[in-house]
Image (cartoon, rainbow, N blue to C red; front, side, top):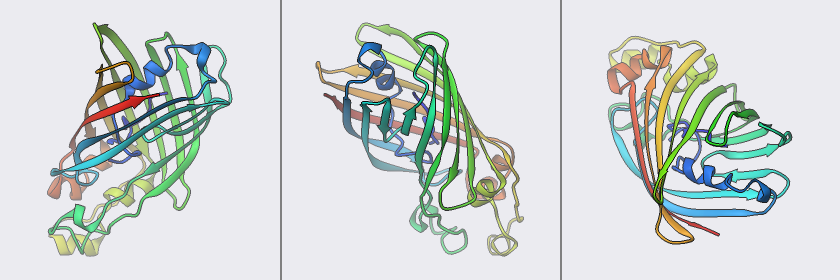
Length: 269
């Protein structure tokens, strides 16, 4: 399952939604042999990601990122990209079951000198929920996951469609379209601006409600360098929507356009 931002997510993407490393194509390659779905399959790697400094920021930072993608027995997967999934269906074209992930927050350093001390930093959160996916054909699938913060009131919905493109020699690539939504508590956590904060920043207060948070398009590519190694590249463009994109925090100090790029070297056992 390729989810993200995200890719995916995500989450972008992204840096929200879990460890943020490209490997949509690697996930697709892992499906290539359905008869081995119960055999352990391990992919490890490391790379560098250039990402928005915080969700909605217009400045970027470079972040070293690890990558782990493990297809374990009993239809369990563990990934720094997709999080944890336990597939209870695994029959026909349907997949579905438990879903868990890790959502990054933001630090004072990432907020920068203009916002540090006014806009609150956010600790990371664990998420738990469920997912459902339908594979129309081997290259094309759609799905979604619904999750909730295990230590807070935030709830998140992610719907996606991804497609493996025809390979060009050894070069493999895929695309994904993703739509994400948040409940009011999650929107306010990332995009809200209290009257006190607005007064300090010289802008308007903002109290967002539940709704669509972003739409994202991602292109992933994988080029093997040997039988076990390869280079993975991802380019993710996201556009903040609704109350997220209209937030005075984003309009005055950030951007609704969010670009994340990743380059990684991976090893597959």
